[in-house]
Length: 304
Length: 286
Ligand SMILES: Nc1ncnc2c1ncn2[C@@H]1O[C@H](COP(=O)(O)OP(=O)(O)OP(=O)(O)O)[C@@H](O)[C@H]1O
Ligand SMILES: [Mg+2]
Image 1 (tube, rainbow over the protein chains, first blue to last red):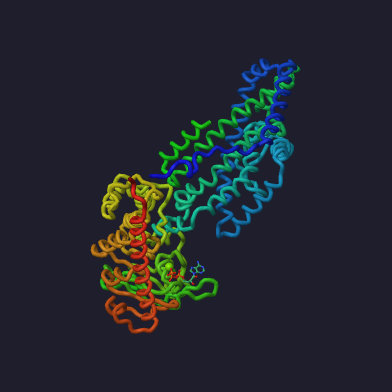
Image 2 (image 1 turned 135 degrees about the vertical axis):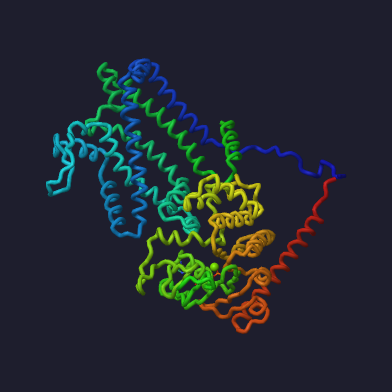
């Protein structure tokens, strides 16, 4: 190399592009944060100490576990299973099954959850105050009598009502997932002699999961929040009711609301983490090797 | 049809099939004896894939009959009246017929070993340990004994197709159907798949192979069947059909194939020499 440095360009020393908008945004956000902090400090009605106390109340924790979380689990279990069944029915060659699935979805998507909850608890309770006969309609054949009033305002009924509603939405999600799996997959399984049901369970659905899991995670998080509607069915074992009830008894309205808010934040954060784990689990065998993926994720984690 | 010892393994008579009024198969007759290797040739759209799929009932036929090993495929013949079989019974009929697809169709969420073990365990009820031992043997047979834990996405196309062959063989089929098993592969990977298929033919497997690989047809096939426009135009030993075709359509197809092969070979040669030249021109590290 005989070139002199004089006639060859050297290191770049340029002025960066200016971003005045960013500074404006920082200033605006700074003012808003300062207002919030100011309110926290100067308005003793926030009463954070009492907020944390409410969060740890036995009745509140019980409401969280036995109402909010249990209700979400029941609703999502029913929603996912029934939703997959509805999706398979919707794609079936049997026109009766297709029709049933369509009508179901149409009905439950049209009914607000608040209305559905009161319908299930209050409405059915009104119809069958304390005896609900299980048998063959318009005949004298009769299997059992259920005392509905003992059930109408339980988390089980609330979970069932929300789950039936959820199934209508999960059906669409499951259908999109099933359709996303290449037809060649089912054909390969069939060519190996696998019957249609098993092909669906072992080959198609596990692959559809990759598409089904992310929106199902969102649905679960939404469901956690929708359990706060339980009061429509007079279900009081539930986080929001318990926290605000405890707060208002002591005239601590905002601490009661903040106790519920913080618990919802915690639960939903955990669910979001769980969702990203599930996405990785059902994404195995696609794209980069699991090891490389893990490494990449730690790298991303280290960045933050 | 009575299942006598000299009956063909595959006996297809006057098979017709239409898609939305478009008749794709117009009366195909084909017999394949046990141990025979039949290569199906024909231009694009002539119905080769459709016919293979009819044999194992991935498509239902509109007319004619197909028997495999004496079983009428898809129907129960009760005194001259055909009754459609249930999906379960059709699935059972497919167990003895292996199929390899152009695009492999391995199960991407399962490892190589799980792919091979899946059908014996889930369909035949073989216990997992026995199935795994057999799977390892089959993977060795296709030259992939070191890949049982890999996922399909980590394999080359040629490796994936060999896994697909092992997966089909795991069901101990009496008949193997191959639909252009090498046409989705890079040229340098074709040979490894053809070698596995050649070994399989030598072991006496009955095979129906759709392929454009003329070398394979000439060397391995017992019989070549040329299809065009949904009918069998001509069939016979490879030396006759490929070497001395009787029909104009066969001759036209074969000469087109030869031109393509030559053009392809030339393109490869040019690409290689261009690559070598590029390497020569590249600045050397000091
Ligand atoms: N599911 C289907 N629906 C409608 N038409 C179809 C379907 N499958 C195949 N066909 C048509 O049937 C004809 C024959 O197709 P087929 O795939 O059997 O041909 P092929 O001989 O395998 O051709 P290639 O060499 O391109 O694979 C084509 O015209 C194709 O468009
Ligand atoms: Mg084809």
